[in-house]
Length: 266
Image (cartoon, rainbow, N blue to C red; front, side, top):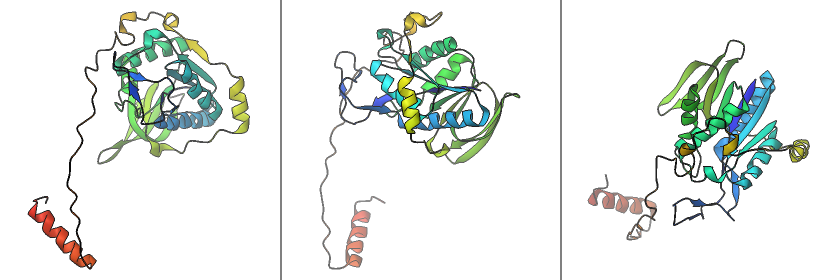
């Protein structure tokens, strides 16, 4: 079974800065981590490989330092890693990112399952996974918290999807793309042997010229349909602190109830 896991390197801090020229994140000199939701995707890919054999390939699009995230994925047990790094990809929105990843995956070759985290913590759109499935023309199963059955010869997969008011069981054909939530597993810690193995593995670098048949007008900032027009901090919320003073908890509760009713909060 060939499994591809898409991961993203994201800022590991809330103290990020924005480029005033193109309104994109300034990622230089910022500590970075693997997007937390993607760790669950990596773990699920490894479990599928352990159950059915095959290999796990992790792929990421980003600046050269994104190789650190790929190395971490390799140390968890992934077999191969691919980095999409090119100035032509800079500033991509979720649509352009999905398009670029789809072209790279076509270069990588045949696959059975693509795994993604439910969303990235920096953009929070949750659009890249479904967009990638659409670009590749394959089934998408989002918000998966359990894989019930996989039948590689029969090209069938059955999963549990998390809904707002419950869950549903869905059966679909392979190949398919799954976006997973954190309930699906507990990511493993890399073993010393895998850390040593990962250090010896070479990450495959892909640029725009390596993507067969790519339309360069659909790459990067210029190829992104969505544009950030303005970035600003929301206005600070002003409030008045009103301390309730009472001798007992019962008196304090009564005063609070009176205050809530008088202010028509409820």
